[in-house]
Image 1 (cartoon, rainbow, N blue to C red):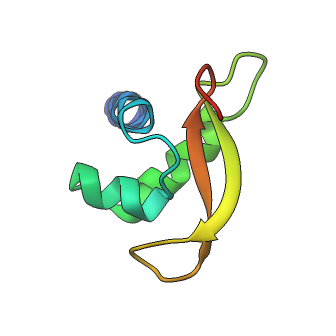
Image 2 (cartoon, rainbow, N blue to C red; image 1 turned 30 degrees about the vertical axis):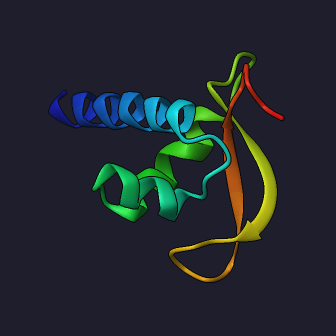
Length: 80
């Protein structure tokens, strides 16, 4: 039960971060949040699933953290 609570809390934080910082990569969002990069990267695809996803995948671009081509993430209601 505690694990589900942690996942739900992380998901809420990640959605809020994507809404605040549109078009960032998972590593950039993690850095901005001060969170574990892998936890953020796990939550984003989960949040992009379903009939009413909270986030959507954007274009690839060079990540400021990893220096690799990475997906960008957008709030589903604000994608450009």
